Length: 217
Image (cartoon, rainbow, N blue to C red; front, side, top):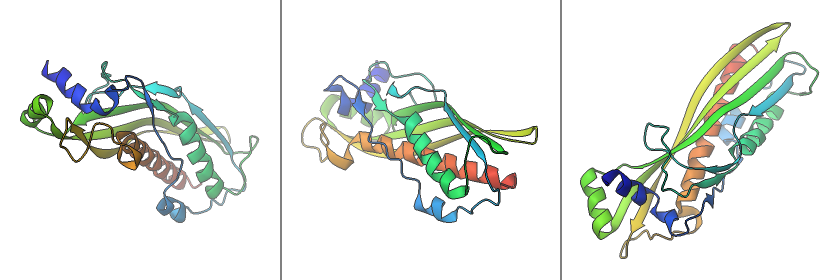
């Protein structure tokens, strides 16, 4: 029963609508990353991106699990397309020429994407908030599983990575709290989810850049 109560608290900001809400995900690659990208000496490369996930509704999982929160209405995401745009922007900065016939050949695969959402408050506080109202701290974590591959002259090298990004949110339950159940604008939980996803995407690009450099690209 308590576990269900915590899940309800964690998703309270969305439950009144009982429908999945959209995540305002940004395709912005960190300025720090882009400023640190060194143009490759390779004259041209072939590049392919593949997403093994479908854009659409995603329900967050409990902490450190892949168990979706059945009572949560979910979020509408575009992670496959968002990461695609970010990677294309990065590739355009990294390589002078990208076409489908060149060698070496680069392939980036988004194998999996999932979210965690949970309270970081103590059990006692969560009970008090559930019963009498108040504010509760929510953590959102976005996870990516990816595979990078470089093929050149008949040989290939592959790297599998897992990256994550997180963001925090304060949710108000009941009246008299500084953060209400119907937060709007850039303070709502959807924006915090977007922040976590963008952080994970940028970490993936950092790992890809390191992969290129370690393989002399």
